Image (cartoon, rainbow, N blue to C red; front, top):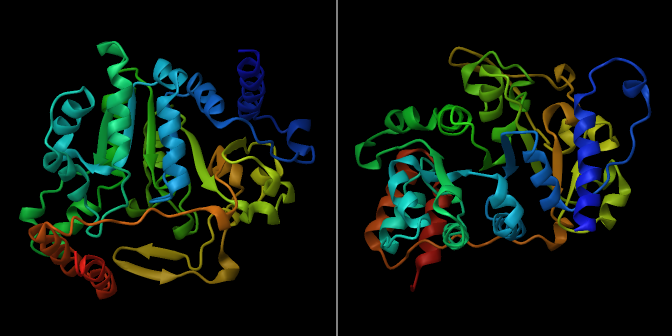
Amino acid sequence: MRIHAFVAHIVWLALSSQFLTSRGSAQTEVPKPAMPVEPIAAIVEAFRSHSVVALGDAHGNEQAQAFLKSLIRDARFAGLVNDIVIEFGNARYQNVVDRFVRGETVPADSLRLVWHNTTIPNEIPVDEEFFQVVRTVNASLLRERQLRVLLGDPPIDWSAVRDRADHFKWLAMRDSYPASLIQVEVLARQRRALVVYGQLHFQRKNVMSNMDMSDWRMQTIISLIEGASPTKVFTIWNVDDALTSVQPDIATWRAPSLAILRGTKLGAADITVITPTPVRFAFQGETRSQIPRDQWRSLRAEDQLDAVLYLGPRSTLTQAPISPVCADRRYIEERLRRIALTGIPPAEAERVKQHCQGK
């Protein structure tokens, strides 16, 4: 208990520093090194001052998946949080997931539809055990304290998708739909939610458009929520030892660790250290033009995100394989149809075929 209280105190001091807005000495001091802290305690502490905490999902990364499950299993998390909003679930099947995590009997084939039918034709790598972990945790909680999993992917009906235009109508809602879902199901009901999405959905300023947010296509979950209400989301991105170019001692950090960025060397670094961008574009209607490198705008990392979750050296990170249900030939044929229909390079279809050969 004393260790947890000490860690919580350190995190509280770091979180409090985010609200220093004066242009006095606090802003002119030389940034200090970012300090790693125990990540679960830090996230729990963030929930004490934020209704929404956004945790980057490094799609298919086994270390990120393991951390998410350990966070959910922690009693401190369930004691504060109500909802988990996920990218890898089609909202058409919200009732299916509600029933499953409550402990009701749901056939495995019905549950798979949740992640088999998202707007992403070649699918986001999914840790199917995540749903079972939430179900198990809920079994130990009172009904009114049970965690709810909110499916953030737009409720696309693939049986009605005949061409790329049909698909794009749904694809265009991949940020606006979950932003609205969070406003209605979480904020309006005064609940707390962990949002688990690819971290580019958590940009306050879109690097791809050179920080220009005037085009609707450049809006993100975070820019939409924070632009529509006084809510401030606490955002956490996944990183590895590539950041040693800014702060060498990161290579010695324990994995996983969390570090607050405000007022640190990492926070003062340009966001491209965390999000390398090979090209940037300007948008005018349907016209897209590349922006010359000498016109790229800079943005401090601490103005884009609030904290980083260090998962370990890149050489140690592992990727879970995507495992199509090869025995289900109808499903594989439908997946190949979606890949072809939406214009994904044929190499993706070949990868699926090769994976399923002989199975």
